[in-house]
Length: 590
Image 1 (cartoon, one colour):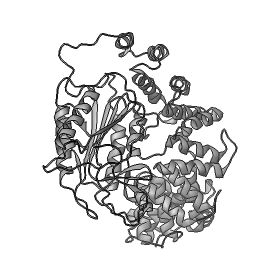
Image 2 (cartoon, rainbow, N blue to C red):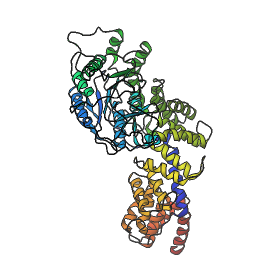
Image 3 (cartoon, one colour):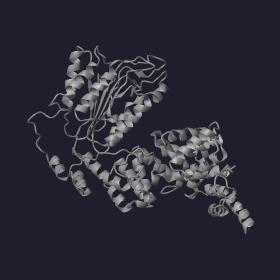
Image 4 (cartoon, rainbow, N blue to C red):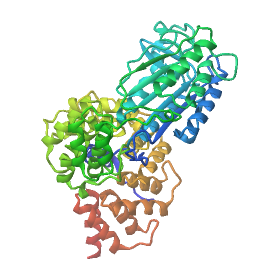
């Protein structure tokens, strides 16, 4: 039998190491590695990205025939017009998680300069003035169910706004009757409500706000039929295209349905099927200047452009160019929003990173990266200021980083309650590091009433995103039965996930599980393998365990010399069991 060495001491050791990892997250950006390659083309409107969704096969309310056909028609049309579709094809009959993941991926693909288009056909409702798209699995009986079952149109707009591009297009063929009937829902209105379009955004509705659109008698709705035709019509600019759709729908429905448009000012012009023949625009000073610098490698050229044309049609692209330089010098390698390969703290040229990130004032991501550069440089006051500017713009990663500063008292006075406030904001945006930190505060009762059940809930949210520290923490709860029902097999499952991502304490715990046969069949060789991984990375408990195995020949040939060597390594780190074992062994052999 291989002695299990963690006990109460091991529990607190694991917790302490994980807390240390979390509090360092502002520097190391301990986030899920979900980054995608981004096109950094600087040609306006050259790259075009669309997310097309059609929901019709509803399970808990009235199904719709047209949306899948509508989505296929629009997806095919946009592909022919040079758009790349998220996922390579329209998303058909999606549940909430799938829709939200696709929207998040859409936002990532918009980074670096692109025209974005979001199209949805299916059920949609207005609740308390907000518009929601209805996944096919949704089952809403009360107003409070809405946030758990439906997809807020606002998250689509948030992703587009965060990308900072010059043009975003949202098309909603979702203005149908409330599919859930009354069901105790007091705040539902017919049709969709009008949304204030963010900067550079055009929102097309199948009908006027608070009205209901027709599905039609064919395989496609009247709105989508007209939309597909207008998209292909040469010579129509963006607004001319929507006007054409409106006229066609009004005619097809004998005036019963009138599409609606909400828009904010848009930089430049956009044509789906090409500009009118012979209508080459006269180059304005803005365009001439941009054409001369757009391929420049000097950030000063883009700073000069912004000083000359602060509201110019290429201002967002100039800022993106500057942000790309900042990103290359300051982004973490596993930052999901990074535009380049990223740089580890030890390799960062903090002087250059700070200078580059200060050239993009007012940009939430640039301020976050500036904070990271200041923090790596040990300039914590500057880090706190930059993180706060970004966090106040609701940038989730900066909110998590600011929370970590309040946890550690770097650049600000230590304040666990304030740390929790910022962690909670970031956790609500799905930032796994913040969710884990919030769970740790609940588990330890630090700055908040101790609640191990709530700790487990937050750990699980982060663990299910693949976040290794949370997986290790959740495994610990299952191992001890704190906050969840004790389940050693489930503990092993989460320890394994964390161990395979390099979390050293989880590697030790997995080795101990194999050594004792707890939650997994006993396997001495596998125990030795995991002990060695952790021991070679300096984990004192694993060093002690490996020394024990060498001393008694458990899963490996007995070797007192190796036993002494590993005990000494562990004892040098203060491991009391290793000190006792070393004294016994050396006393017996000397």
